[in-house]
Image (cartoon, rainbow, N blue to C red):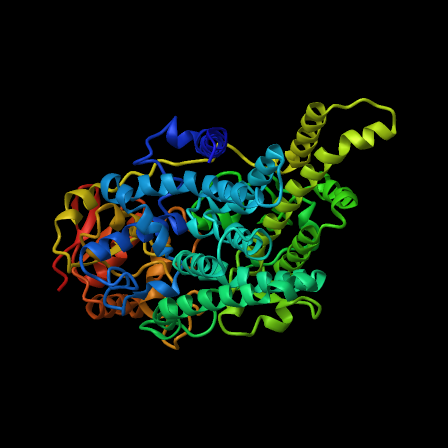
Length: 604
């Protein structure tokens, strides 16, 4: 690789990292402490701290990372492959987690996710274009799309580290067009990519497979001669990829679907954010920069960018009218490009899969998804595994298509603009044309950029003193029940104490009494009592506070059944005096107040 090319790649990657760190995460890397500052110690963000800690801890202690008893202790544990635990990403971040703690790893992942996503797109699009500004603008669109920016503060590495779709595009171009590697080499690389993606997000793997097959069929239909000439090469690569993937993933796939503590049916209900409206692609909504309920329950309390409709559901695939119009006009130039039209088919299919409508209200997350007869999910929504996909997440592939088309369009305009200017007797040199096209491309992206609320909001999240003073010195087999219970911000505190105790309850996908996910089935028994008793200061109320003798009996029975040794009430518990009085009556004695928390110990 030439030195100039190396400088280009280093410059692009460094620029994306600096954009992420200094614009989006300024309050962490400049105004805060990356080892202690996080968006919120609650909801999804707290869960992600736990996921980052679990995999390296399990490997170092000789446990399978596929299953844990460190949460839902006494209740059967949790199947980590049935959850979005992104095992591969937590392994990569393990040195930071083990050295500086899970909050530092969270913040590094939050900066690196969009930057790596954009850079991988840059690598892929260079296979089909030659105009560097267009490649960079496409990388910015894909790496910092509304979908990525919305997921980033919540810590969803599985939906900010989106390397898989661009690299699949790269390998397909290499397989069919470039021919710089053998079919076997491409097949092996394909298999490695599939295996890694399986341990980051099976949902993204399934979505990419669905849309990718459609795009390949469309490309084959537009270029039957190419397929006829290269069918042996294509079959060989697919055979190698499929063979290796099946051998490596057979057991993990079985474990996720049929292993211990697997679930029946969908892992979570379909809230209204899970399907978009057709107009959201050019309409940012009526609540831009306003935080919505879905951001707050996910653990983010700042402005979230495009929000669509009265419920302020995120418009995660907003592209803006200028970009849509620019791409439509650009079809004049790339209209004969089979690659461009294959990308168009991919984007349109992904857009159709992302659509949906809902019956429910803003504060009723168990709303049911309604799909008109003409939408693909009315045909595929009932299928196993595929039916678990949240439609709105197909937006990733819409953004990929938009970014590719943007780079292709700018590349074509850069080539054709001097000739077009000559027809109108206007002098326009190559450098001036390149600069003008770059400005037009940046202007087309301006509406998307202006919807971002930056810097992202962070909040103080001190670790309650009890966890450092007492929790870190408990026997590892000790089961602790922590208040607040609903939302389980205690998962983050447990992760920060490096799993020095087991946690009763948790915030993950686990089966209820019928085998269905507890996210789908309304809680009953002691779980319902604890949810209503202690939703936490950042969680929405879960119903009326419990007060009956039956509720107290449920608490006592659960503590015995779950083998709880310590019950800790932290200062962040909502309606603290009531909770302390209720538990004192249920347990027959008052708590010990120490290190700023209230503790009932030696319950076993």
